[in-house]
Image 1 (cartoon, helix red, strand yellow):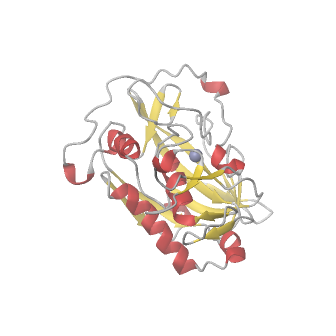
Image 2 (tube, protein in one colour):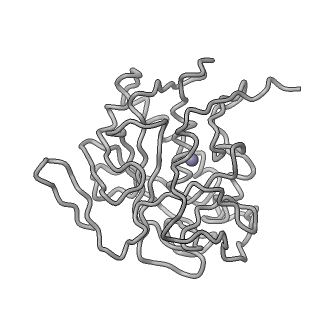
Length: 277
Ligand SMILES: [Zn+2]
């Protein structure tokens, strides 16, 4: 995929016109027949690697170091270097990188996934940066590739953009106006690798931001694990929780008018789980 540099000095992504659905992230309730919350576009799920359920993938990522514009993107259309999101919160690059690694590890510990940092934008499949036009909390955007098989379309690129005006935190602070970097990243990475919301609640992929009163701020639920293993298989080839997805998704969403409303993580919702019974 060739990139070009526009006269403004901003890198502009250009891609062939066959990607009619480029940049659409569907954050509708994507629970299909099997009960797994997987992103569904044109009645197909999306994943990295081979276009077959239960197959692993190695995925590269990088941190954005220059302005990036993707005119076709639904979310993260205009992105800025990551530093712009971290600076106001006082989070350094090394600390942020550690949070990113931990967020990726949540998924790679559960499924046959490997995430590898690369330096060059052209080599990266997932790009993490700041929003150039701050909105809500964070978004993910996915771009479809050409490869497809029954039920699955390959992913070509994904972006994750963090709002630079949000107060990002590294540890639980009891403040309802701050957002935990690792938890939000794990959620957006989930979108970037093919997962949708199971609903407002439900592990990492629930769309309502929740700060657990105790325990880990970022842990996968059984539903998160079942969904990711359906796409990529379990880590190490053990028996998956869900061996196969036997039905082609039939959410009935017209491809050209998919409800792309971002997701409610970006709508300032924040709630706390009750402190036990
Ligand atoms: Zn979401």
